Length: 337
Ligand code: PEP
Ligand code: MN
Image (cartoon, rainbow, N blue to C red; front, side):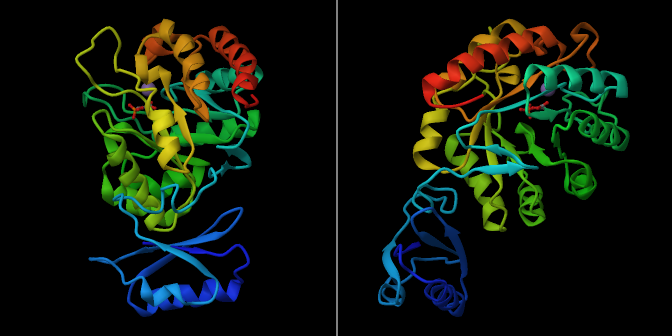
């Protein structure tokens, strides 16, 4: 259930509603919006009696929420959420361009790619220090050494860092170095990890599971918000289908669909979405054209020697071309880049 406050409701009115909710043994989540505050109620097993709230001062309406997710829904917050990743806004008019290698392989590689993507116009840097690999014999990432290299990339380029957190054991360590914690496709439904990141108050980039529906993606995001972390961005990275001409099938229809029902920003990752370098530019254009809040792009200075995801990595000059095209397209859809 959602309690929508009147535009003129005072802080005291909001507090009274929160206390009434808590007095019933439930949790209240005030969500301030541009026009009015909504208060989400969680913790209830059955339906909550609307009468307890309808007559409190400042309450405009009480809305039963039929969707299984609550706090991530547009009913809870009408306007788009803008997440700040160390000062870089994601979800506002400016597009977010997250770029870097799949994995941090060495200081030299990470820095070279960092300087190149920074010069081309990226505003966030990505690179995995802990890598989720299908085979236990594949490169697993440099771990702590990789995190230290990422901190160096940030210091030299000024770009905030997005990096993956694989498990609850390393979450605090990764959070010490990262500006944004990425939850990968394979971990989208790792609920203990989501709960932990929900309590940690660092921005989270939540990638869609490779066979997850949008409802499942939003429910995973709900875990983060329900624990109190509202700094959440979603990412469409392709799903597994019968189609085998690309690594995954990038589901761009997810963008307008998510934007209709949720206030959270959503990025598109055409690198994992296609798995093929030549497909990354056209699908980046398509993603921006259909309203994505930004892109996640893998870039490598020597893709032929990359320790992971080489075939989908753009060379720095291809990435520069991509940013140039995105900058031309952005105004067409009312954005800047
Ligand atoms: C990645 O971003 O490098 C990654 C492993 O992505 P995904 O979880 O979408 O496969
Ligand atoms: Mn990758």
